[in-house]
Amino acid sequence: MHPKLFIPGPTEVEEDVLRELSRPIIGHRFPEASELYREVVESTKEFFETPDYHVFVVTSSGTGLMEGAIRNLVKRKVLCVVNGAFSERWYKIALANGKEAVPLEVPWGKAVKPEQLDEALSNGDFEAVTIVQNETSTGVRNPIEKLAPVAHEHGALVLVDAVSSLGGDWFDIQGLGLDAVVSSSQKAMALPPGLSILFLSERAMKKAEEVENRGYYFDFLLYKKYWDRGYQTPTTPAISLLYAYRLQIRRMLEEGRIRRYERHVRMAEMVRNWALRRGLGLFAERGYESVTLTTIRNTLGVDVPALNQALRERGYVISNGYGRLKNVTFRIAHMGELTPGDVASLLANIDDVMGWG
Image (cartoon, rainbow, N blue to C red; front, side, top):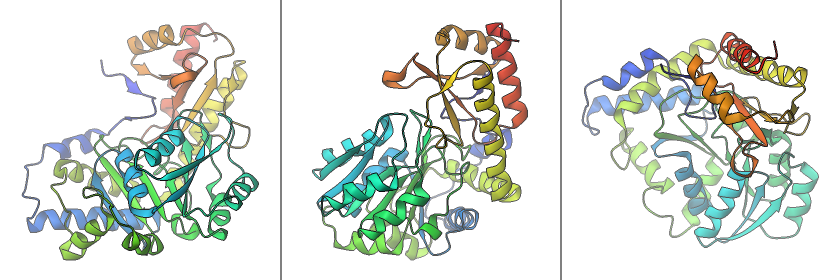
């Protein structure tokens, strides 16, 4: 039995989207491939309301584009907001690429506040700041709407990891003037793993022109060059995944941005309210909870592996806590094509397994 996935990725993929993977392969320089890529990119711009942005869909994990953003947009010094495992990863990436990376450390479970960012940026000449908008390890949603203006006041580019939120949560990429937003296919976009998505401002593209040693695979100028050449990519893309992406983004456009966001909010509220009714706690700071997954404090001492084994036998699977939060917390994702009905069914089964009914 395939267990329905309530984990922070990969997420459930609809059957018709999966069938797109079996289409015959075409040459990546064929006109049909260019048209496929053009439609994917233009539809992505339409859904996320980013007509003035450079948008690239890249064959890689989101981590690849996180590294790409560092290599393309930072010559020397970057401030990295660190309030969870994945924001810490971006800091490590910056160090691994020889940048002068300075962490702004916030306790896990807390969101970074505008005044904290303002103070940190005042203490150094930073070219950019990295922010994980949705920290999957803690279930915290950083208030990017308030943080971006602060960073721009200091002249810093805003680099955003939206890997686990794009396509579920909503924030106005173009309205906020975010400079680089990175995401992945296998989370709220409800696609198989293997693609990453980049939204790049014109300001960021200009900065990349000034940066040396951008690498090759993730050279943003190279991606622009091939797009301008006729909707091409520098290297062979995952064509089958692009077929699946095209159908899924059409589905998202049909559902509509607002309805999709409201569905995710409703599922998030269901899980939060259920956890609190059962005497469990929420790990995220109040008012800064993620829209796409909930990290639950294991205040009742639930045997999370045993619970998950029982759930798998019933056709469901959730996620343990991440890293040092393993067993201290557990996580329920509510993203992608899951519905409130799916969430209600999962929660009823947890209640039944635990005898909480």
